[in-house]
Length: 326
View 1 (cartoon, one colour):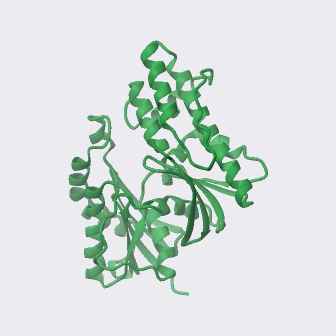
View 2 (cartoon, one colour; view 1 turned 180 degrees about the vertical axis):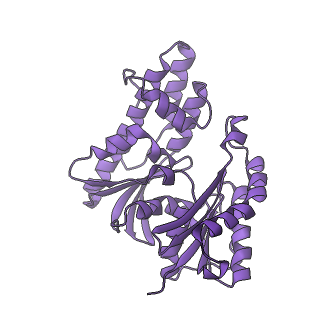
View 3 (cartoon, helix red, strand yellow; view 1 turned 45 degrees about the vertical axis):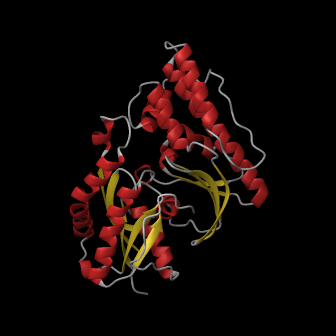
């Protein structure tokens, strides 16, 4: 069987990334140009600045990915690029570049769902992982439990009704003046604290999530008591959101009977949440390498590979979809 080389391009938020992945699981290169230092000045991502930065960096990032993979442009079998969800201006940069490259090389274009990319990061880390399984998707823009029926067939069992979990992390970090990005700051400080503060958990009748209540509770506690132990508050916040994630995961296991659990997305890098998922009894738990939790193009190339071999090809009229669902 001929090896298949996919060029992945990711520009949905504040990382300009390109990667070459062989046969869906072997990463030959994974180049990421991050804008964290730029957006730190503003306490969060500024969409217009992100888009302009993508324009400045994308050509060089793609060149570096091809060079590091030690292949030629002519070796690429398809171009996979994120077309949603994400910031529309940022998405359009990577999508436009991917379209142009696809046309110039006369190879298929594969519009890739960013969320499916995060799920596929686990295929890179775990060569033995195959569907079906349950995925708990936890990122800055999405929180949901997904039944992965096959490489290209997904069913959302529950999703957040308000804030995504990563959004809640960033807002809580901002309330406590920890800096940006909030997730790693809370993780770091939480290691020094104890979960001694009671925070509310939202209980819903289905598998949906709600994180606005706990975010508001942390805000009120901090305003009423500015001298509150921030390390304890971080640890208590982590413990409570982890319990919410685990509780719904257990419900999903009961509903489906599936005991293979995958976590994905930027918040899956949180050390406390990772440890709590590993405690799930009678389950096999998979999680991506830390470097593949946050946005990258290897995951897009991996997801694109499975679309490619299953005939899911896009045409050049493909447009960015900032609110794309799985």
